[in-house]
Image (tube, one colour):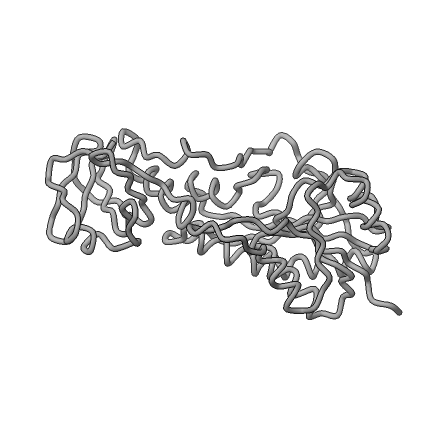
Amino acid sequence: MAPLRILFMGTAAFAVPSLVILAENGYAIPAVVTGPDRPRGRGRLTSSTPVKEAATSREIIVMQPESLRDQAFAGAVRSLGPDLIVVVAFRILPPEVFTIPRLGSINLHASLLPRYRGAAPINRAIMNGESETGVTTFFLEESVDTGNILLQARTPVLPDDDAGTLHDRLADVGAEIVLHTVRLVEQGKAIPRPQDPALASPAPKIFKEDCRIDWHTRAEQIRNQIRGLSPSPAAFTTHDGKVLKLYRARVAAGSLAPGTVDVRKDALLVGTGDDLIALEDLQQEGKNRMTAGEFLRGYRISPGDRFE
């Protein structure tokens, strides 16, 4: 019997393990759909998406449409004759595309749906102090992240996790779930179940205002904000008009007025709405990320200064 033909769609690094596991398990992947090459990084050099790089290394045809609603794109998808579309970390597909395959289109989402529907489920879970999250595969429907659930896998959010470590762990867990889901769909053994809208919660895209620290809030909330935005886009505060990005912190006993700084040897402490925050990794504008000790040896800051 001919292998299942899977059209894979993804852009970000989160999608790469899922593409790799499908390719390594013998599924026919006639093409990969990903985002156009764009200027990326600090140097704004034009570069490919992680998914394009993974596909190219395996000599898989790559499609990079500017618009997913272009009829020419739908025609190109139809001409590939996919049995199934697998979507991971991609854009919103229109119905005229995701209804093409005979077995439908499935998506991998980095949360336990219906919780954390939206663009930033990993960041929002950590920012909200969750102790558990996971991944979900589901059939695509027109409303975003609302389709019938196929499989889920749970994983703890560890106390020292940040968005980067949790992202990588969920990408690997998600790849295994994608493979299992594809096998169930292929064998006709998948049992979709509807989501309960009453349990839904949003995970909207991260904006700049989500990243600024309000030092009047609780220390644990600030710590969760910092780790939920680390390493990118990173929480930030300002000192003497300079932006400081914050990557790692811990809660410490003590009390200072919110935003007020104390310096003790290699420790940089900041007052909050209750306890103190000890900043451990941070970055000054135009400099590299560094430990608090390295920062204090090269940056002028004194006890009693304030972060805004």
